[in-house]
Length: 552
Image (cartoon, rainbow, N blue to C red; front, side, top):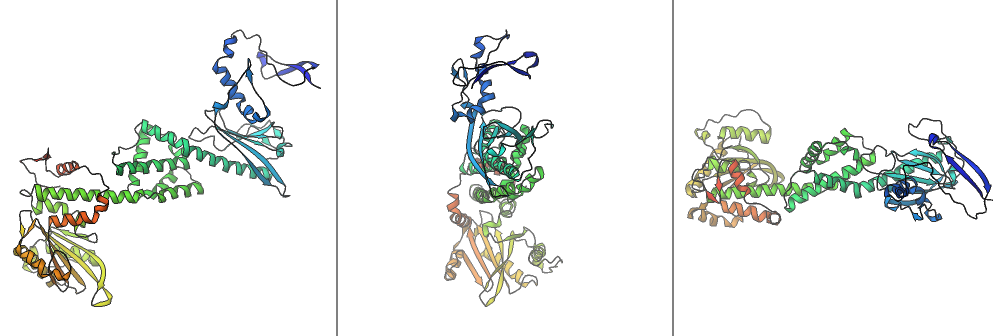
């Protein structure tokens, strides 16, 4: 039997209704007609307005979506209300949970992510097998910093006997289950939270993070990057880390003003360019709590990003390439004005890697007294001041570098030796000859006479560098070519002397690093900026008449 009756709601008390005029119906199907009367501010045009249809879609879209297979529809003057545009994403799945009696309870989950915000809060809605709402519970994502507008509907016969209490204050749940402590329900909530957490991360990584990056681009939050591949890869690394941070913990970016965003992003960029990138994790944890899973995810992205190592290597090589270009200008273009002590040495003392990655700088343009004490402290940790009484102690080799490197002792298999280098730089206009060779040879004699230098376990390499070599040096090359070492001009026992031109040094560097240098994009004009910062002005590829000393 089908009944017909009126449900009357009056405007003076819209929360109370009465059903009247009950009669038996001759109709064969059910339905509802809504009649609005006594509303004089409305006319028919209002019902065709998009605002009205959108309002109905907001209110009933979820119901129509859940019951779409049953043919439910909502029409205004015969036109169906469209709600599909409100749903950005949806998914249906089933969760099976066993209780203490090993009985399976099926829960059919419908997840909806709305295109825009609907209501003030987000809920889990619990429905019985008749799709009637028994209760609802706040999800754990009501205070997130992103536009993750969602609803989750759970249908199950498990809720058929659930009772709800309506007289409890809405602090967290609008309705509290009398049997909310049921083990199955507790397990369900845990599973739902995990599922919704994965959906939130999926949304953030796929859409939310992209929107954040677009916002940062629009407001010029990112530091400035050049268009070359190297800088663009650095930016890509920064963007990826920001996306991962946002995915793991969106609240990190919540409530930041534009200036704070620039500061935070700039700070991240600086850390990513150093060996300290993994310390980002500790800094983030000092700002917000991370779960064990979030911490592991963030640790993984900071470790697996290999660009930091590549970036550091390329940056190192690019800086070295600039150094070589600067030296070329000094020893070729400006050779008439360049001196070893005021110009070349200023660069070499900061870039002694040109003579070997393995050396630490001990002294630069200091006399042998200082050199000996520095040397002993670096090698042996000895702080005692050794006094040199020899009259030659005031002589000043330009660069003295050493390294406590273990190399095989050819005279004793189980023993190792220590290696040191000394570099004598000459102004570009000086041609290396017997005179310069003997100067280095004198250094050698002096060093070997000193108690703190003369261990048989220490070997020595001496480098003499200028723009050209004379016939005497060429003959020395030929005399020692059987040793199989290029640029060797003297070898005796535990010491070797090498004579090189700047071109030899530069070409050796370029050949060694060519495979990486070919990949670098390098603006030669930046050399002018370096020279300018050092007091040398070069404009329009012309050398100014006034050359200022290359001093810090």
